[in-house]
Amino acid sequence: MTSLNKQQDIDYISEIFVKNYQQLPSIIEDSMDWAHCNGLIFRTKEHKDRSDICQIAPFSLFPSPFPKRLFDQALSVQKALNLLYFKVSWDYEFLKQSHQQVIKSDEFTRRLMSILDIVYKEGIKQPITLLTQRADYMCHYDGIITENEINFDKFQLKQIEVNNIAVSMGGLAEKTTKLHRRVFKKMGMNVPNNDVMPLNEPIKTLCDGLYNAWKLLSNPHAVLLMVVEKNSQNQFDQRAIEYGLEELSEGKMIIIRLTFVECAERLVLDEKTFNLLLGDKTVGIVYFRTGYLPEDYASEVAWNARLLMERSTAIKCPWIGLQMANTKKIQQVLSCSGILEKYLTSANDVENVRSTFASLWGLERDDDETREIIKDAIQNPQKYVLKPQLEGGGGNYFDKEITEKLQSFTFEMRASHILMQRIRPLIVKNCLIRPFDDENSKKLQNVVSELGIYGSLIGIGGKDEEVKLNLVGGHILRTKLENVNEGGIAVGASVVDSPFLF
Image 1 (cartoon, rainbow, N blue to C red):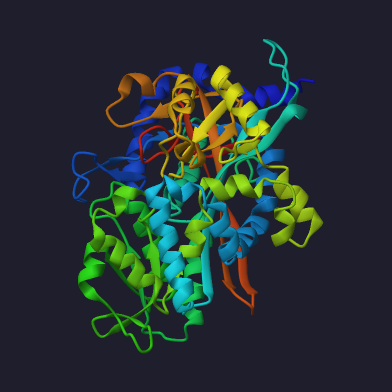
Image 2 (cartoon, rainbow, N blue to C red; image 1 turned 60 degrees about the horizontal axis):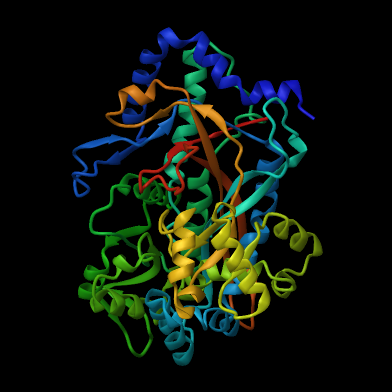
């Protein structure tokens, strides 16, 4: 049952908080100053278009406790997840069949699928696949909760989602790990070793994937085009990738940032070679840091620009097949019996990946099983999360919203959503530091965390399938108050955090 040492690890922040309460204001101020001096920052919401004024990125004052067994499990399955999504991205018939009902009511997914249809009809011009990924998990407690007792064997790792486009927060995550080590020193405490506070280098993992893909082109003059929003509050995190690539390439990589509208104005597709041209330069890699939400395509100009890039010989990160593999629908279908075995040849990989899946249900059928799960979700919505095909930390439905939506959906609307088991997360205590929130920053509050593991893969898709590189490295905790449903740092729900493993 309860291990005294493990319980002490979970409660360590409370002990620190009480012992050091008098110096807490100076520690918070020092941490905020360090954040500014070391780039743990955002643009402000009021001035997303300006870098001459910024504020701290929201962060936790201490690293949050997280079970080491589950952290190690998440690391151990990441290479298999990289491989899984690489393979799925090249299974056109599977992607088309899986989204057959979704696209009847989900216009955004339908538009993305139509681009994939055109690319396959014309013939894929670039088989090199570049995947950058962050797989997100929570610690689920599958036991009986009592006031004085926790069975640590009942903690389970459960996948929340897998991100294959605009994988973010790596730069902020690295800096937060360094900040937390410094906080321990400032409080006169021993800094935990790497087994407790693991080294953290997600930027290296992401940059290694991008840089090695660029080298495969054998064209030192090829441009990396970063497709971005017009105004992004998280631009500094994007710059961490850019500057990392400049360092890796010793300044040889040319990196250009353009919006979709600017891409439409400046990019030209050579209809003979299908090379993507930007002035007198060839675009070697298109790296999307936007394009995962309907509002990212504000007009047909943006959609046309995306299609132009997908038809080219440029390596896309992600290419349209991988973005279609990134939907909640695919996440749900992959959990069905026999599906993982189509893509992963190792029985251990299949077992290990499947062990992380939460219970997931598709809603596109009109059979007894689907009717029963919908009935139960309407009557007991607290047991579920209702998810559309959206990314970016928003759009999910909880509690009474689930009942209302399921009772009002048409069949086609229902089919574009999935139901997911609601996680019973590990609740710990921490101080969440946000701009202009002095009062709450000094409070010890109940919080829950979501763990993200970073990976990258380079492969050759199609009949000559080959994996050139498969990497895992780097992590992030995104931590929020226990009563907040949605996640996401950029949307304001969570703060950047790092794990204290126990």
